[in-house]
Structures are given as structure tokens and as C-alpha cells.
Length: 155
Image (cartoon, rainbow, N blue to C red):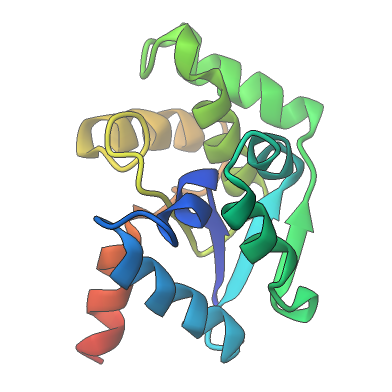
């Protein structure tokens, strides 16, 4: 079965960012070659509306058969609010929490992000997952694209 990876919006922007471009493009090659499935949400689409035109064009040109769109739900909003109310992250990070909650509820194999402040952060990951477990959900494995590429290169 093809691994399902939830891509937050930062990953799409990484395609054109000098610091993150190499790993991000390799990751999207994995999507195009069918090694992983790119899962994204309607929140991602909303955030991409404010992205540079090159990022929007890149997203629109991805083969839709390699993508899976998931919806933001009321349950996702409630779980995201729990992350905030239990101070895993401040209220300004609600959209980041919504990505995490959506990925959790859709039981993806990984959430990947270049956001090291609010998402790919060992202390926050512990907080998100302690709430996920207490609420009866699975733990969410959160990684950067570099970690996925490094793993792929070593296996």
C-alpha cells in the first residue's frame, strides 16, 4: 500500500525556496513516481490562494491521481482547539493545529512540514500526541521533508 503523507502548505512553497528546494523537489518526485500519496486539505487550498503564482501553478500541474484531498471537519476544529486550550501552541497557530488535527483524523502515515516552530518540533509533537492518545486517536508521526528523503535514501 502506498504511504499517505499529509503535506502542509509550507511543503508546496518549499519547491521554490532556496533553502528547502532540493529535498522538496525530491519529495514531489516520489509523489509523481507513485512511491507516496500527497494528502492535502481544503485549508491547504485556502492558504495556497496567498502563495506566489509559481507555487499555485506547480500545485495545479501535479497529477491529480497522485493526490488525495481531505476535508476540514467540525471534529478537526474541535481537536485543533484542544491543542490550543491545553497550550501546546498559542491561538495564533490555529491553522497549524487544524492541519495536525486533520492529518490525525484522516489517519495519514506522516504529516510533513517545513514549519519547525509550530509543527516539526519535538516538544509540540509530544503535546499534540498526548492529546491525540487521550482523545482516542492514533499518534501522528510528524517529519520534515528532509527526514523523509534521508530515510528513503538509506533504505
